[in-house]
Amino acid sequence: MLTILPLPIVNTYRGWTVHKEPGRSWILVDNKIHDFVTGSTCHPEAKDIYAELSRLTEHIKAEGYIPDTWLVLHNIDEDDKELALRSHSEKLAITYGLMRTPPGNTIRVYKNLRVCSDCHTATKFMSKVTRREIVVRDANRFHHFKDGRCSCDDYW
Ligand code: ZN
Ligand code: ZN
Image 1 (tube, protein in one colour):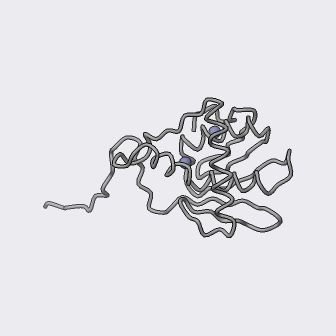
Image 2 (cartoon, protein in one colour):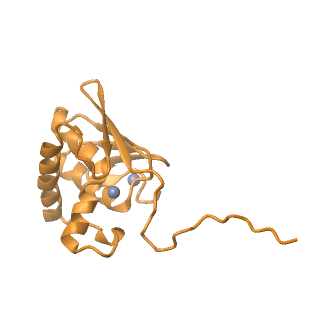
Image 3 (cartoon, helix red, strand yellow):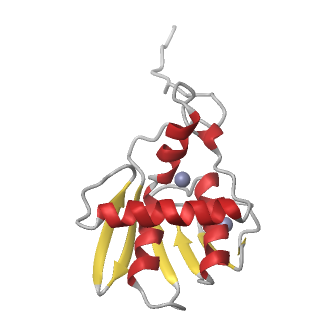
């Protein structure tokens, strides 16, 4: 008897991860949970957050950060790819934490999915240039960023 099982469609393109749910990150600031969705501009301070993130991105690029635009779909140009990476939820949440918590405070962010390799690299640089400790709890584990390094040693 022939049984046809419904097989899930698996996308095999390297670096192209198709998520069923959007990337979502949370941070607690002033005893309030701030929720960021990748690419979203609905936070009341979204304009300031994107402006600060642009400034921070230029700063870390000067320190050697190279946006991993290879992760983004291929049919858009380089500038747009960089912009798409820049709007990842964990970057928005971390930036907000840097803006709204006192210098020296540890930033703690929670993410529903696994942190992407570009955000991981960017966060290492951010921890270095801002001299902040940044803890990201993603779907798999804790990442503790400090002085340009992560506790996972880039293996996660
Ligand atoms: Zn990312
Ligand atoms: Zn890590």
